[in-house]
Length: 67
Image 1 (cartoon, helix red, strand yellow):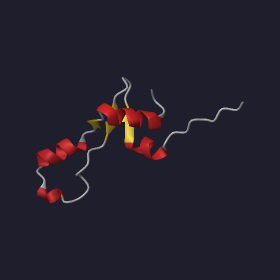
Image 2 (tube, one colour):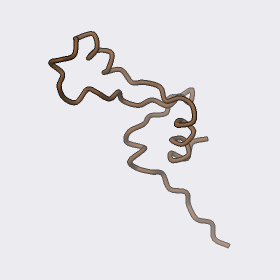
Image 3 (cartoon, helix red, strand yellow):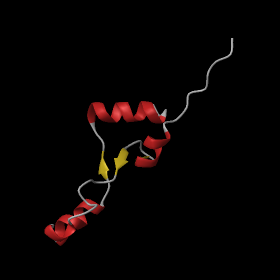
Image 4 (tube, one colour):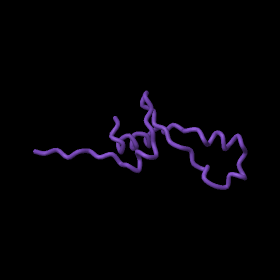
């Protein structure tokens, strides 16, 4: 019996990053437009990558084929 290869979801691979210790990171939202209404401090904080936690992280890992 031939086994099927498990494929990575490319759209997910482009949006998320797995660190050396296995943490999942994603880019912050609310940064694309209307930046004039946001403070410099807020924009600076939005530029950093945020960690994905909980049930959602489990789903993303499954799509990336990372256990």
